[in-house]
Length: 168
Image (tube, rainbow, N blue to C red; front, top):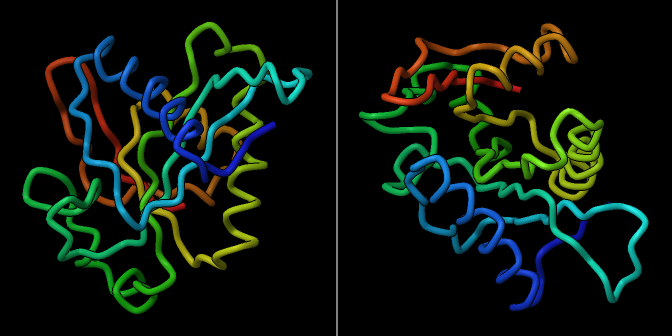
């Protein structure tokens, strides 16, 4: 189950979940994009009164000139160098703030993000998704989706993590 973030309460739930991960892992919390489309992943089998947010994802229209881009820039990746991405820039989205609470990892809940991606794709008709994702998640996606997930460029090595630039 999931919900499209539309209300201030849903936004607060999104922020609470995402910012918990930022604090826990020492991640930089990118600004919330004004034109971002956010989803809360919900724990299934709860009533509408007992919603429990277990994950988040934000989709942002890709703009290589956006100073707040989560994927493009001097300390990130240079996706704009690729002709296929430049050609379809108006149908390309950044994936940001993707997380699943650790209490629900390795229990099959991650596949619920596929429903979120399907909903977003149905509504927005993207050609590509771009993201910087942790190496473990990249491996899992490659196993699950094979060639549909393509590494674009060199890995970004940080103090506590390795981020892989991907095109999906």
